[in-house]
Image 1 (cartoon, rainbow, N blue to C red):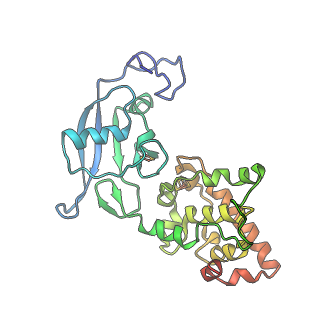
Image 2: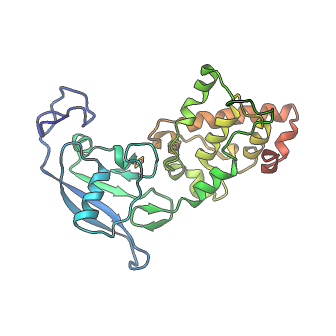
Image 3: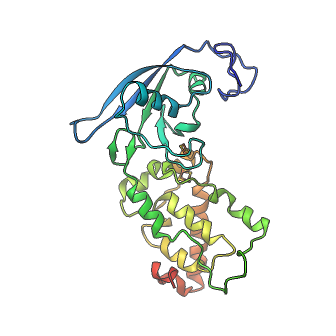
Length: 276
Ligand code: SF4
Ligand code: FES
């Protein structure tokens, strides 16, 4: 679709059709966080003037800089269509996927500049690339795969559409790390599992095919699990896929209490219980 630049917001701008927008400039000012630990003592912001074209995303502007101005600019990407989660960044003060964020939309939000920062509260490796090691370690620690203890069927383990729908939202997480970056409890408690790992635990607890529900609840029942969550909803606000991690954590709290009341043995088995 071609947008008549400067006349209407159009769909690519995300403001709804027919709305009259302010005239868009021919160039946008891109302000990008730069830091190379091998060369720089301190981080700095570099400014680039970019001629924007219809359909250009923030990820495209980073490529524009990489290909025309500075080949050392570091950022992550893979799918370029909102599926892999690699390009999550802090753009104009919000968590967004760079590949899904249209420059036109930012201009129509009244911004004349685009500020691109790495995910906050995570160690910066270089420029916009952050260290996600703790995020991935937490995710791995909850055994994010099905634990099925019945004899394997000839084909796949089936699930009704109704049961699948219960976990749709959580399966839709693309592991971008935005919720983890936005969570105050994760900033202050390095052992806290964080919203993503707990939401993914709920994804399996609520999956009718999984047979290790009590063991999974045991992993989040300790002081670094669900009870550490202060329900501030930063995670929900940050999520580009509209996953409600807070609701999942509430579900874990409810199920954990009822497992405790019935004296579920699985609660005490730890990660080992998920591998038997
Ligand atoms: S729940 Fe949302 S914010 Fe968190 S990792 Fe998944 S997609 Fe990203
Ligand atoms: S590059 Fe995959 S989500 Fe943006």
